[in-house]
Structures are given as C-alpha cells and as structure tokens.
Amino acid sequence: MKQWLLTIWLVVTCLCAWAQDEVSYRINGTVPVGVRTVFLNTLRNEPIDTALVENGRFQLQGTLPMHTFVTLADDGTDLPVNVLIDGTPLEINMERGTLKGSKINERLNKVDRNITDLTIDYLQDQMEYAQVKQWQTEVRDSLRRVMTATYNKLVVEMKNVIRDNPDNVIPALYLSQIYNTLTIDELKEYLDERHAYASHPLCLGAWRMLNHHEKTNIGTKFTDLVEADTAGVSHPISEYVGKGNIVMVDFWASWCVPCMQEMEHVKAIYNKYRDKGFQIVGLSFDRSRDSWVNAIVNHELNWIHLSDLKYWNSEASVVYGISSIPANLLLDGEGTIIATDLRGVDFERKLRQIYGY
Image (cartoon, rainbow, N blue to C red; front, side):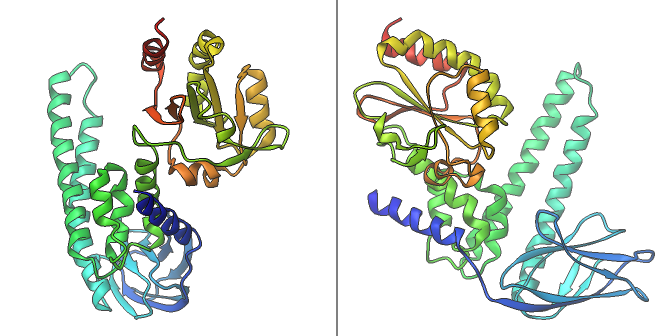
C-alpha cells in the first residue's frame, strides 16, 4: 500500500510539472457554405488561433506542445472536431467532421465521431427532459431512465476506447471526462503506468481522484501536511491529530456557498462536543487572506484554521486529491479515518454515536 501511494504521489507531481517539446501544426480544410471563420480552441474553449475562410477553405498554422488535444469549430457548425497535435499536417472537412492526417488522428476521429453521436443523443434527452413540467412525474421518471441509459452507453463507449488504446494517448481525452464516475479498481486499471497515456496532463484529474480514494479510505491513517494559520505561522496537522481526541479535518473556502451554508450546523455540533475534546481543523482553499480571515471572524468559526492560500493548488488539495468542496474527514484518537464527508444530520448522528448523547 505504501509503495502504491508513493507511486501515485510521484506521478501526480510529475504531471503537475509535465511539459512537452513544441511542434508545428498545419491544419487545412473545407467548411460549409456561408462559414467565414474557423477557430482553434483548447478543450476548455479558450482561443488559440483563428483563420478566415477564403473560397470555402481555411488554413491554421503555428506551434503547440506535442500531444495537445485541441478542438476546431466554425461560425456555422454546431459541434467541434477534436484533433491531436502531433506535428503531422491535417486536412479537415468541417461539414462532415472528418479528417485525413496521421494514423492516430484518423483513429481519434473515428472513435470520436461515434462518441459525438452518443453525446448528441444524450443532449437531446436532456432537452426533452427539461421541457417536461414538474407535475408530470411519470413522464419525467420515464425520461430520466432513458437519459440515464443513454449516458451509461456513452460512458461504456469511452471505457471501451480507453481499454482498446493502451499504446497511444487517445484515452487521455476520454478519461478526463469520466474519471469521477469510476471505481477505485477501474482507476487503477486505467492508470497503469505502462499505458502510453497515463502521464498525459489530461489524466491529472484521474490521478488526483485515485489519490483521493487511497488517502481517504475508512481505516486509513491520516496523511500529514503543513499549512499556515491566520497569523502566518506554519503548523503540521499532526500537531492536532492523533492526540487521543476526535478531530474533523474540514476542506472548505469562504467563496464556497455550500460550505458556508453548512457552517451554522457545524458550529452547533462543535459547541456541543468541544468540551469532550472534539476539534475541527479547517483547511481552506481560499486565495485571498482577507476573505478567509473575514469569513472566520464574521461567522465565528472558533476552531483551528490553516491555509496556504493556493486555491485548488493548495497542499490540502494535492495531498488528499480533493477536487470538490465541502469535504471532510473524521479521525479517531489515533488519527485513523472513521468517516468521510459528513454533513447535516449524518454528522450529528455520527458524533452522537461516538459520545453517547
């Protein structure tokens, strides 16, 4: 187990610092009648390059890191075309969504068109579901089942692509979309270091999810980390954990609305059991010190607070693989995890079980 956790940590660290040599890209293609502009974007729809259409054709050229996934869209086509930058020139038909180029791009295009068809079906299911009135419960339940079945088909298809392509980076594109639906065993299977895609930056979320599973399993000892208090003094969480008392490690942020909505309930439980030794260590994902401190003071959150003010790049996020908040760990007196993500009545019920009232 320790060796596996070390492997996860090393891979996540390497992915965070991952860099590839830049290669030239040249993308030519045709567009439907009436299209004037073609856009080259990141997967997050951030602009990279733009080309004006002349006589129904376009050309894009420049440099990007090797094996970067990008999308091409135009001002007349609904769905973009995904491509992989690999230094090989591409010829794209934007109307059909097809391309000619390297073998890996042609393979990507083939599998991606099938996934796009399923994605369109799923989006249509969502649109149909959204148009049904709240009181039409039977219709809504029926459509929800259809929508779930379509989504499951989409996930299965992506899993098939991942399993069928261990020798190239194509799976990274789809693993980045479904990793939060996967079991720990599936994550371990897909993130085999022997797979060509396992070190691709798009797999960072999956590695963090696997890290999260491994670090937050019930029965696992807490992992220590160091962050600063509101006065700027650094503290390891081992200063407060494993000292014989029950401790909740709370991952939160002042900008997180669900986190702040939960705080009144957390305060009530803390005040009820603090005399019994119950402690909370808040690890904030804030960026602004003023916002963090003001939230603590204004909401009277009178427990231990630590943060490195690095937002999602915080030590707490990296070490524990936290990708969404609120989140928490409940630790026994030895520092072993006995519950996770307790909120509302479940939180209260768990402490009543521990303390007997």
